Length: 140
Image 1 (cartoon, rainbow, N blue to C red):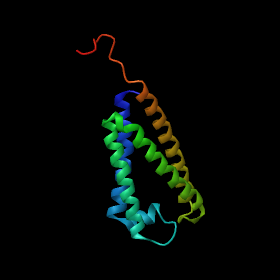
Image 2 (image 1 turned 90 degrees about the vertical axis):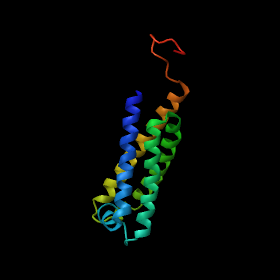
Image 3 (image 1 turned 90 degrees about the horizontal axis):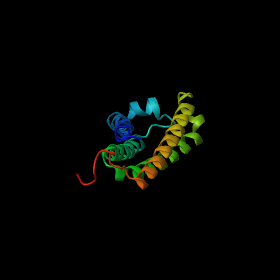
Image 4 (image 1 turned 180 degrees about the horizontal axis):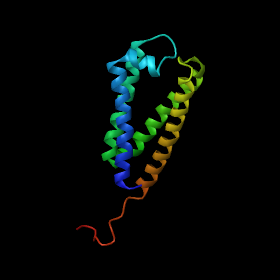
């Protein structure tokens, strides 16, 4: 993957996490009603999600510009997303509206697979540092 593609991919993923975090933090009741209605409203738990999503979103945005951060941030984000997906699969029948449960579970599973693939790609790229272009002499 090119550096430009790494930056854009991680930037988009990071901003998406930050947008969800901002929504959950600023309007927890709205966030709960649209995406997180798996039982009684609990503003504290919604704000906890906001803090977690903001943390991973910030890490992804930073990793977009810092190659050394990519693999650890992608691995930890994949781990959190995978555990979050398991929670949604366990509660798949408890969402309101009912369609939200399966859609969110599927989206989280797909996102986990994407994050794991990116983490593996990043780890492989880290073991093979980019070479200078053929026309450039190292040290110039």
